[in-house]
Length: 115
Image (tube, rainbow, N blue to C red; front, side):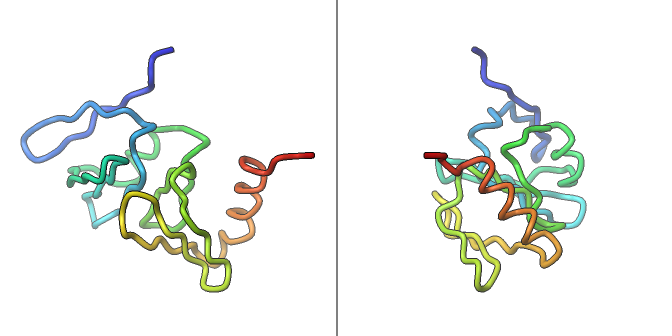
């Protein structure tokens, strides 16, 4: 099965990237930083909302207005301070207060193994 890809507009070049390789997207005004599983990242000349529409995958979660996280790359979820530590990058992603309950429910649905 072919891996789903999206086309991202970088600085004077376009990047065709596999969605499953994206760890995190962080908004920066009308730009976005895209972080990848191999440890690299680059700036994209597009909003996080537009990228989110292109991805349209249930494995990505908008934790905050400025963050779109691939749930497969969560290292640690710190419930006490509503933060997520991300694999492959030394990044701490906040969870918006109004999204905490839904975020926890989403994690439980996706990763809870029933016995």
